[in-house]
Structure formats: C-alpha cells, structure tokens
Length: 372
Image 1 (cartoon, rainbow, N blue to C red):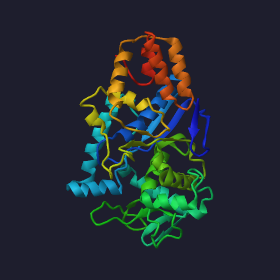
Image 2 (cartoon, rainbow, N blue to C red; image 1 turned 90 degrees about the vertical axis):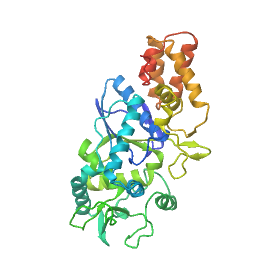
Image 3 (cartoon, one colour; image 1 turned 90 degrees about the horizontal axis):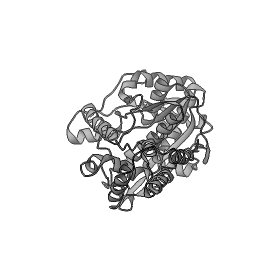
C-alpha cells in the first residue's frame, strides 16, 4: 500500500505492523455534521476497511473537542451548558456516521476527559525546557523545537498568516515569538476552569490531541489524519509538543483530506454554505451519499453541485442490480485503494463491471457500500 505523506510531500509506502494505530482529529460538537466532516471520516473508513481486508487489525481514535472557543460561543448564543450542547451534537454526528456505514472506531475520547492528562503533559513539556510561563499562561517555545514548520513546509510568513486566521493570537504581548502557541491559559468568566500550578484556566486547542493520542495510543502512532486545514497550525503544533514531551517520533505517516466547496467557497460555518448530512438523509439513501463522497479522491478539493446526488442515486441502483462475487473486480478495486486510496478509480472499475452486467457486490462492500 502507498499513501501520500504530507510531511514528505510524496506518495510513499505505508507499511504498518499487524496492529495499526490511527488518530483522526474529530469534531468540535456545536453544529450538525456537514459534508466536509463526512468526507474526511469516510476517507479514513475506506482506509480502515482496506487495512482490515489486508489482514491488519486497526485501532482508530477519533477525539471530540468539547473544550474550545467555537463550542463556548455557540453555547452562549443558545443559552445552554456547553457540555449539553456537545452531547447532543456528538450524538447527531454518530447517527450520521452510522447511517453512512462508517465502521465503529475504537474510542472517541472527549477533551474534557483528559484534563489530568493535559496537566501532566504540559508538565513534561516544561520539564524538557520547551515551554515557558508568562501572564498566567503557558506557551510552547517554537525556537526550541528545530523541526517546527517541516510538517507543513510553509514559510514563516505563511505560518503567521494562517496562525492569525485560525485562532492563534500572534500579537499576544506575553509571547516571546508570534508563532509560540498556548498550552494553558486563563478562562473567561463564563468558561470552565480547572486548577493548576500555573493558575486556574483551560487547555489550549493543540494540547488536547497530543494528550489524548498519548493516553489512547502511546508515544508513536502509525497514521494521523484530519482535513488539510488542520496541517497548520494544529498538526504542526501537535507534533512539536508531542515530540518535545516524549523525545520520540510522534507520527510515522500524515494523511490529510481535501476541502469541499459550495457556491465557489470552501464549506464553512462562518459562510453558512453548508450541506448537512442529516438533511441529505431525509431525501436520499445514505449509501448514495457515501458514493457521492468516494467518487472524489480524498486529496483533491471538489465542489458540491446539484447533480451529485441524482447521479449517485442512479449509480447505487445500478450496483444493487448486480450483486454478487467477482474476484477479478475485487482485486482491481484493491489495487486502486492500495495506490493512494484511489476511490474514483475503484468506483469507475465497478461502474464498468456493472455496465458489462457483471456482479459487483463484494467490490462495493469493500468501499463500504453494502448491497444488502
């Protein structure tokens, strides 16, 4: 199997041990699952299915970020407790994933469950000399971590722009370097706070995933995933603090998924140009929604259009009419998936077989489209 690795910027062999450790950055549960979320997690689901098909066992951890600014802001707006909001939206997300036939993951730990782990993790980073206290906060010192920036391969100027766009306060006067990032900081009056030796407060965004990955999977994981908008700052910072704390490589292979657009702009909650999975499910078979996702390659940005669902509903009907085993087709689909998870190639191969009136059922099942 070969997969594109973000850090190496190349398609390279992916050769894990028999038991594969995967960490994917999950949702911040303050709104419904949109198609961008679904596309990300379906990509890792197809990967897991092929790994299992190859004889591996797979342990996927997908966190829930229930301590974060957007969740608190939405809870304020609605006048509800942030954990109540998170619980409801997490349940809706799980229903969507189940409908899309995503395999159950090994665990879905919440950030709020990891506060003791986070405090201990920050202590490790401080003890290793990679962090400092200032103004009631604890910051990671990027100057101490020489490889900083080599996951994203962005210039300092690009990193500064993205940090500012994506929640980093580059003008914080307590920072030694604008790219230094928060490990722990004081909470606002209406936000949750936990006691620490650095003062009461809450964790920064990046530290949550590092602490959960270490707790759930250990020092080094085989594959880390998420949307490509998480490459910087989230994953760059996550790698830096993890390797600073443990002294060991954090991730062997970084796999990032593309962004989906609608009306010419990336789908985002701020723009409101979202397509929600639970709304799609009221009108379309969830298997057709899954097909609409996997007809696109996981690394190539694409745009929603109104023909997507009718086309894939028709495709699904054709596949369902040709259930059954076809060893040659199954092997062809396997070859596609083993080359950088080429789901468009796999879908095209199944389409061609169905057009020849050949059975396609077992190949469709490998993609998570069950004819039953």
